[in-house]
Image 1 (cartoon, rainbow, N blue to C red):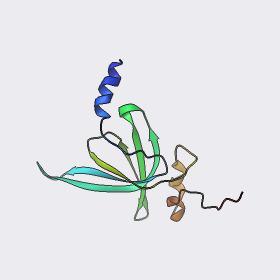
Image 2: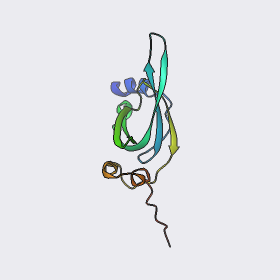
Image 3: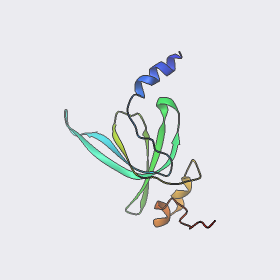
Image 4: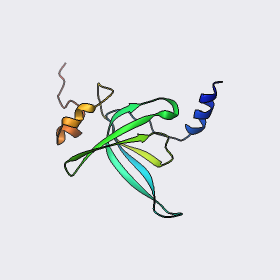
Length: 119
């Protein structure tokens, strides 16, 4: 077996939920506050991209706070991430949602097309 895959299999044992681009997630990150004290800090937003493979998977979460857009890139198998909660799933047709950077208000948070489909 490939030596890189053996090493990666050690890091990918962590249970992570299955989520994709367009989903609204809450990432609980560990923040050390002392020598033996850790606090959990949530970061909630829309997943606008996923990239990488194996143990090198990264995902970008975007949120708007006080009128400013904030994006944060998380390594999926980072020991600093305690858990990932999926709040809402989104239906998207693109793999990267970078166009949300130019959207403001409800248009930036509403991922679904919002149109009623007639057949």
